[in-house]
Amino acid sequence: MHDGLQRDRAGIAGEGPVAVSHFAAEVVARLTARDGATHAPLREDLVRRLLVAVRSMDRAPFELLKPELRRARVSRVALAELYIPEVARRLGQGWHEDECTFAEVTIGTARLQAILRDIATSWSADEGGMRDGPAVLVLLPPGEQHTLGAMVAVAKLRRLGVSVCLRMSTGPAELRELFGKRRFDAIMISLAHAEMLEVGRKLVKTLKDMTGGRIPVAMGGALFLDGTEAASIPEADIVTNDIEAALQACGLGGSRRRPGRGRA
View (cartoon, rainbow, N blue to C red):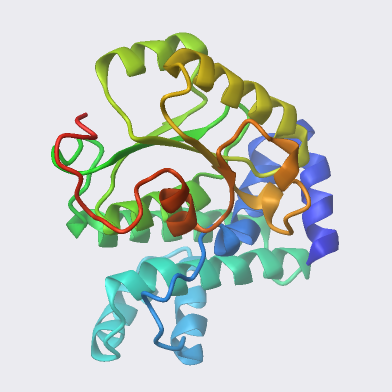
């Protein structure tokens, strides 16, 4: 798996969406920590059936699987934070081992993203913002396209009661305008590959300058899976793939609501 990751990282810059599509499926499973909220073990039969369903050209297999997921009492939290990441990991593994075609990985990644959108609708902290809760800006810098991983992280933040504004490839002018209109308690940035490290450093500096250093910035993503790059962005307040640790470092841990903050 490590060799496969290195292969894809090397190709992302030059291959555009083609490289990123299957890369996203490989890394998303490790973008959010298993935080103890979902201790129920994965059922292997359901993982396999979900994998088959999302790889199919037809939506019917997943529709047929829904009643069984309900009977097995697989919660939305477990589906979002355990089953979807595990199936994404297996899609990526299948690509690296030549067991999945590019079309299957692309379709599967898109299906997982759609399922995640559907099951997360009940988590109330939407982009518009909970007026009595914390608000976080999640950024994917220009050049990053691993949207499935970002959506898994966003869904988890919203489940925790955090209002999330997700922005991708947003330039300095747009960020300045956004900060003029909305207030945020923290900023989280996701990086997937080493080629984006300098972009990440510059983005953190830009954000600190724009906000006068008043808003803490957390960095995470596939680039930091093994911890070796964590010290490469000293400007960030924390570098981690554990969302709850990031919230804690940003002063947002231990409470779902913070009156008077995070108006969006």
